Image (cartoon, rainbow, N blue to C red; front, side):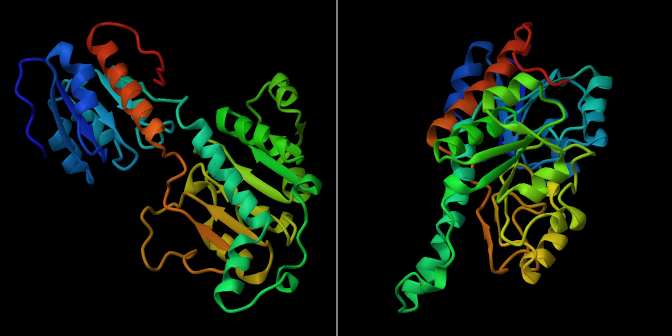
Length: 325
């Protein structure tokens, strides 16, 4: 655990963030004279040690703030999640303690949707296969046949929030037909996206590419299981830039190895970083990137600024902009 910066103001803990420095946080929280500590908090005991006396905690994606951890936060007024998802925070426990929970729901929208579109394009044009042919001394299109143009392909979007809507907008620019499933979205959202609202079963059966943008909640955990994968065509490609736990990874491995679906492009896994025994490592047709879809220099700065500003608001007695609980 890093030592707190000298001062007499509130103690702010940064848990699980990997920032190269703290200049932005120090600038934003400086007017309150905040003392800042940080650590990876990669176990419950480490999280408690780091945050027990903090009046505010800024949380990355790695540490789990379970009920047991939250219970030990004696002075905390705000848990500011530096990210969109809050599945690593026990919201009920925070509510019982009277702790405000916030997130940053409107950053990295373009970055994540760009990444999803890049994965779709890579599979559509069979870039990995083509590069492998050239590196192996081959040439020509014969091994790549068939290739279908995107303007004759259908994209199924699961979840049409900010990121799902952005990928829909980009896919339309390539002439793709859009199907969408989102039980929480109003009819107007589908109309804006020019998407056909369908049930999950139809989306799985009728889509050439399926991209997941659902939140991780009990109902969505493992939603792409063996039964769901069997509904897809053997030419379907699954894209996931949301949460790894949305997919039953053992079932996906089986589907890829048996030819049940053509491919999968994943930026998230249920275990990050994956162990060498992870079921999807080294599986043909599976492209895995290191949870990098959210990142750009601009997105990183926006994330840091907005999450720190929520801490500033709450510690100054003001209402936060993006309260989750």
